[in-house]
Amino acid sequence: MISAQKVAVAGRDLGWNLERRLGRKWVYLGAGLLGLVILVLLFRTLSRPKPTPAPRERPVSVAKVISKDVPLYLDEIGTCAAYESVNVQSQVSGQIVARHFTDGQEVKKGDLLFTIDPRPYQAVLDSAKADLVLAQANLGRQEELRAKAVTAKQDWDTAKAGAMRAQATVDAAQVNLDFTQIRSPIDGRIGLRQVDVGNTVSAGASSAVLVTIDNLDPIYTDFTIAEPDIPEVRKYLGGSNVSVLTKPPNTHVPARPGKLYFIANTVSPGTGTVQARGVTPNPDRLFWPSEFVNVRLVLDILKNAMLVPNDAVQVGQNGPYVFVVKSDMTLDLRQVTPGQRQEGDLTVITKGLKPGETVVTAGQLQLAPGTKVVVKSSNNNPTKKADADESNQVP
Image 1 (cartoon, helix red, strand yellow):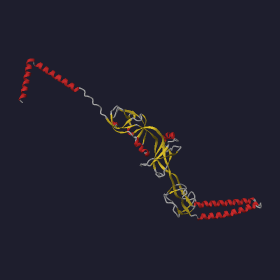
Image 2 (cartoon, helix red, strand yellow):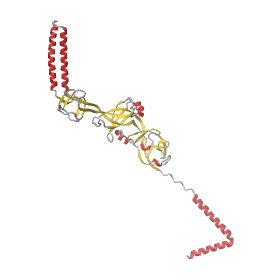
Image 3 (tube, one colour):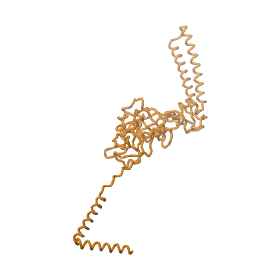
Image 4 (tube, helix red, strand yellow):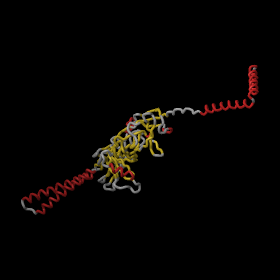
């Protein structure tokens, strides 16, 4: 405390002494100059530019551009239909006396299904055979007389016609007797019977349907093609790579390949679509008639197509683009032309990239051309997932 007072007293004494020697004006001028120098030095110190910090590297996920053969396709919704379907009806009238199948059974062509009471038809056949014996005996006598030239030719012709007529009657009676055994006309799966044993059925177009048989292997796949896609489809019709892939919806069952069987010649005026049909193997009865299915019509195979993950493709004011990572870990914004999406979350790039280049798949929001990046994750083999999903084609 005492020292501070001494310093203050000494300061006042020094100021009084300078003021007495130099005058108050010069003292104030010197103090002002000293303050100005201090202010200039302070301003220069504060206004000196700060060093620019090095740009921070942005973390991104990347993947390689790959080359692979992929399909050119159309995806549609379709329904299945039996390859063959037969409504079994009786060709003769009578009472059903036996049934030889169970509902839902697999049957082969020629398997016995129903038996109609054969007794009336057996009687007709026996009578026709008796008439045939008499007609043939009469023809034999006429031939003997003709050989002796003691009978008219007209009598021999009449006897011959009678024998032939009797033979035809026998054949017809035999056919009707055979019709009392109703057999399967095709291989297939039998449906629910519509007539039980003991019922009487009639012949002809108005006769009741006894049972329905559907051939399910192979099976038809019916779908439609939109009118705008017709020129593209027509371009590849008849090609060796055209096929139809069928898959049940909402399942992990692999899509099953089949053949394109039919395309209609006209566009439906009500829907603007063209009817198409494929044929698909169905030995395990995976598909059933009238079932909705996902259908992929493969038109061709694109050889060595360039593929990138779907997330790599962004859309800007100038159209689709991707960020390409250069060798110095800076970015190049590249405008691209995308093609179809493929299995495994991949997109075909028809223009703008080269196989082996590295593209950004995540973290594009804060990126710009020239930005320095650091890779936080890499998918250098995007085909692995695609190959795993190849058998699951048709979304």
